[in-house]
Length: 189
Image (cartoon, rainbow, N blue to C red; front, top):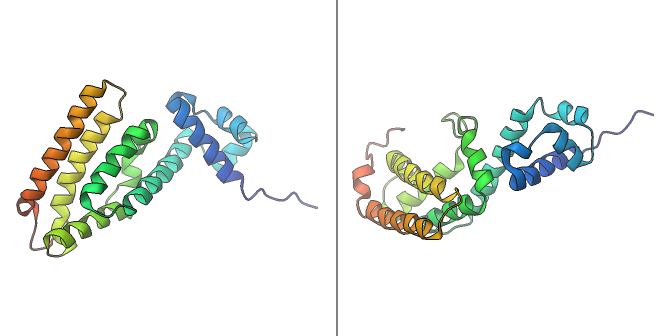
């Protein structure tokens, strides 16, 4: 009788990789360590993932899904920004991985549900169609990512509070001047 494939093996491998990434970051993520943590062998991990980079891309996709899940559970644009920053602060290794593989998961040809969510919330709040808010999305995303990147680096609480306070103040100013970023022709950006 042929051996039965372990249908949960890939998930066990990814959960093990996620635990290692969370606690040790990039240096702790080796295929050997993942295999040991998942209770399997290194060759078995190689059968599922070609190399460390493939595991990192799979983890980044997982982290993106977790971030999107948190964002989709928020009711307002202001809450979106706070949730995004909180994710970066509470998951610094994950956030850094997310953006070290950003071209694989944020490429314009890939699905970007977070972008669609924000653009529809902007249209709901300020009027018009979601596609009119492409530039506004990028302005807000780049601002949020900059603040999140700073907050994902361990540091002084006073400095982190200053970044957070200025971020929220700038977001308020941005929303007060949203028309500067709105494209009423609705061209794709």
